[in-house]
Length: 303
Ligand SMILES: [Fe+2]
Image (cartoon, rainbow, N blue to C red; front, side, top):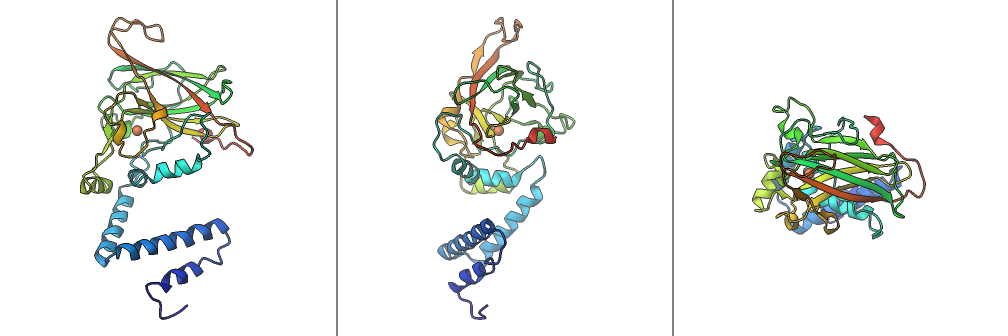
């Protein structure tokens, strides 16, 4: 290695240190990462103070991160990286399957399993919501036995993990369900609401400094896994939400905007109950893509 590295020769010198890597993909990714990182640094003429600020920022993102507060995921989300990775993974442009979108920072392992028809609200107060879904393949055939993870906020826009003290560390408004022989799943919960992504950590500093909105439009998360099919991570967004066009994490898609139907007290709910209060229903068909080959890794069984 040269002892006379310059602003331009240092890039190749670093890249050469990866040429012996056993993993071709690792070599490709790191050589490209070094190229872009160095080009970026030269382009903006990064100062020492700015470098210290960036390192301190990343250190604080790490310190803030826990299994239930995923600040690194949030950083990826607000920079559009999560959605970009998802779009690259689905760039075949298939219109026969349901669009995917980002996972977001509020998925947690260890969510409770639930039977179809059960109340997954965990006792959190709110406007009752009845969610009915169907899971099919691109030919419209039902996908039986699919694992369906679902999670959402409460009516004030907070997830269970954001109010652990109030809920005594109990998970709520999330569950793992399984589709029946006709590919259907259904549950009762409470209506979610639009919400700001957490801004009390380092990511909030970026949003404030850029005068950016932290709001996400109202949505319900879903993660489908079925043997023989590609996993699908997606969301349903409420039609008419004021934040659809300005989603802080760039996850909202036109094809995933659906009607959350309002019902009045006295109407009959899908489970046959005559409701004494207003409630909502949402119904959607999700289409999975068949796997070409390979084994199915069933994450749902790992919990
Ligand atoms: Fe969310």
